[in-house]
Length: 297
Image 1: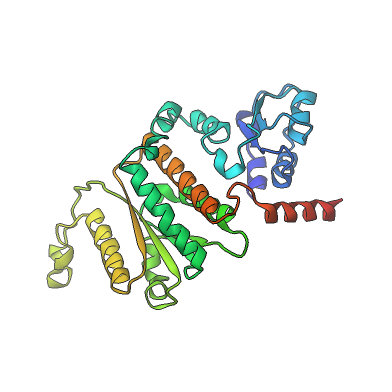
Image 2 (image 1 turned 30 degrees about the horizontal axis):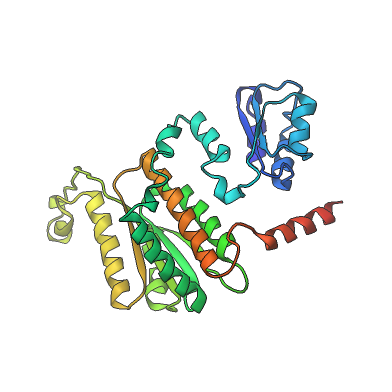
C-alpha cells in the first residue's frame, strides 16, 4: 500500500537509500524492484551493502549507481552507528560527530559500575526463566523508533537455546487504559523498563471554571500529570514486588541518542555472552530466509 502511494509521486525528486548488509535481503530487493526506479547512472539512489557478488553490489557496478560499502563484521541490529544508520541520519540533518561523542562513556565509572551490575542481574533473570517479558513503557513519543530497534536487539540477541525475553513496547499513558490491569494483576513474569523525559512544561491547565470536580488539575502542566501517572504506576509495581528499571532522559539530543544505542548494545551483548550464547547471530531467522527463497525458486 505504501509503495503504491509512493508511485503516485514524482520519484525522480526523491532520494532512495537501499540498505542490506548481505545485499540479497528479499524484502529490500522486492521493494526496490516494485518501485521501478533503477536506471543507469541514477543520481537519486544510494546503495549500501557489502562488497561481494550480491544483488545490490552487482547492480551498483552494472548500472553505475553510487555504492557505500557495509562493514562485513557488523550485523544488522549492531550496525546502527555505522554507515547503515549514520548516512541516513546525516542526510536528515543530524550531527554525526555528536551522536558518536559519548559512545565510550559506559566503560568509565560510575557508568561502568551500573552496566556491570545490570548485566549480572539481567543474566540471572534470563537464566532462571521466571521472567519472560520485558515491557518498555514509553512516555516519550519521539523515542518510539529507538525502542522498536531495542525490541529487535533484545529478541534476536537473547532469544536462543530455549531462553530469551519477549520485548514489548508499551505506549504510555495510552496503555494505562488498556494493559495496566494485566500488568499489575496478571502473571508476575514481566520486567518493566520506564522511559521518561525530564522536561519543564510551564503551560498550566485552568480548571477553576469546572469547580470542585476539576480542582485537582488546576495549575498543573501536562508534564506534571504524565509524571504523576508514571510515578503511580511504578509505585503500584513496587508494592507487588514486580521488577522495574527507570531511564530518565534529560534531553533528546544527538549525544543522548548515541549513549542509548551504545549502552543497550553493550548490555545485551554482555548478557548473551554470560549465558553462553552468541548475541551477534540469528540462526533461526536465517533458516526462515532460506526456506522463503526455496519456495520462490
